[in-house]
Length: 251
Length: 204
Image 1: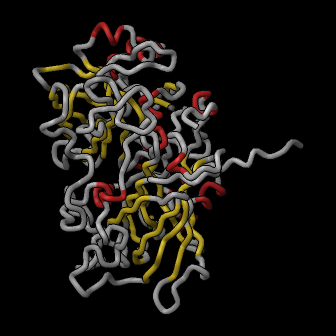
Image 2 (image 1 turned 180 degrees about the horizontal axis):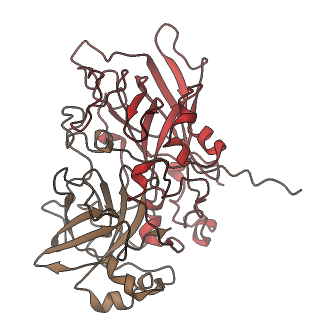
Image 3 (image 1 turned 90 degrees about the vertical axis):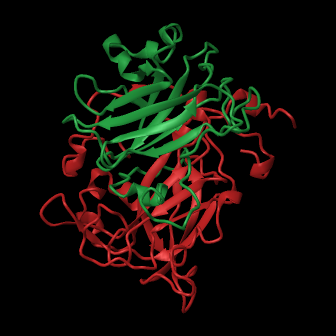
């Protein structure tokens, strides 16, 4: 690949690498009961990406508010902050070729430190935190790097089996450069024993794929006396080069 | 042994869960004051070119019940058939139309509405023109990996008949699952997750 900074490269328009559907969870995973009636049963129609999947919208940094990437304060009253272990989550958005992906819109949502979501359909008895909304967003930089601040969410029970609990997790929505790269996933925390008991985690068959969703505690990036750091890299589908791009028109 | 390709694996998907609105449409979820508006809910402005249309979508499960916690995104060309994307090489799209929309299905009725414009035609990989369509992506609790499909327009019979993607569907009886009937300026598109009329979903 070119060593030119991303802003100087011609935008890529090739089709995306084929998705490895054995690495992703299958649609039908009966241990996660809701998937039973919500899983397509017919074979998917496979075709090489067209312009409709290879293109996608652009989100500019100018749409971000100053506090969008700080869940500790973005819903809090002035001078107050959310309750819970203060953490920073950082990492890079890469594609399957190992190239940093700039300009990626990352939207996150999560429960509060007690494991309670701020949502009208949520009924867990843990209390709401008046200073915690639970949403944040950022856009990756030139090298694909991103960072946001939040509190570590709590685990919580959910109606599936009689005693199923979600491990602490942060939901990620990731918007790459093409609609075919669209991805929603969840980030788990290193060392959490709840990960391996969770029916939603276990919709993924390969333990290595589960480890890919488990953020690493990074004491070197931790801010002493302030917040711990977790590193979470996200990988989007790679894309093939086109002849047009190989010729590097305009150079 | 050969050399390794040094490729990374795509991050595996996980369900968006029941509270996807908190992250993607917080104002819809009554979380006010964090973002000024929910992204993607307004697609068309005064200066957007093209025919105004309303598209109503529902997502229906295998028991026939509309999902009341789904989130749908659409991506489409402008009225002239150009995408507002850096990867669009054929010309400049309408600057007053991003082509991207996001809506949550109603918590009571299960329906959502996109106020948009009818897209122009865009070329298939071999240069033939595809029929006008919306690219559609669905996530919800119980959906482990986002579902890709397309919505075609019921009043575009001639274009639909020569569309290269619709032509790839082996069982012709399934083609209508991707075509939304028109009534006035509105189209209605029911996405069936299972059953005899299961929508054709894509691996793209």
